[in-house]
Amino acid sequence: METPNENPNLTRSGRMVKLEWKHYIYEFLIVVLGISVPFILSKINEGWVQKQTEKQYYKNILRELGSDLDELKGNKLENEMQIAKFEYASQIIRLEQKNMRDTLGKLALEMKNFTDFRRNSTIYQTLAQSGELDNFENKALLTNLQKLDELYNYINRLEANHQSLIIDIYPEMLDYIQIRPYQVMKPEALFDFRFQNKFDIFLLIMQEKGKLYQQGVEDVETIVAHLNKEMQ
Image (cartoon, rainbow, N blue to C red; front, side, top):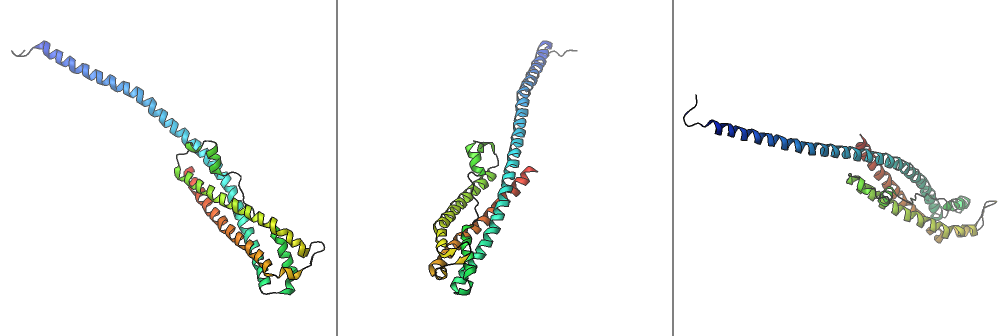
């Protein structure tokens, strides 16, 4: 039974308006979902591809760093052996142990041997030149690689200085020492303070190289540990 003040047509119209608004809202949500879901899935896919690309870079970097680490450790050990020899030679001169002249002469000929850890291009330089730096979201890794690049460049300069010193000094050895058959021809020259200075200069360079090699080992091991964690 209808109430006197109730208009059936208005009531139905009100319900229809409410139903139409709900319909529009549902349609709007469907359209939004239709646009958003593919976009979200695309972003997820891009993120996955980015992550896989970075992991491949990590594998390549780890392989190169492994080679660097082996060479740094080998050079560090060989450099320490050379330092021990030159310290012994400097001591022979300082104590004027003339009976050790043959030993001193042989140690002098060792000046031609030196460790050489030089890189024409570092990992960071390769990434920068190829435009791949932007592909890395891991900025901490890039910072560490850049610091390693700076260290390698410093080592390169020191290695070049060491080689230049050998080229300048070593020919002088041939004025004092006969190689075949081996004989010290001018023992007094080997025991001169100027000759001791040459050993001491070599020692300073080699000791500095030793510190840089050790720093390189520590820096590379830090980056390797970081990459291994990222690869998990």
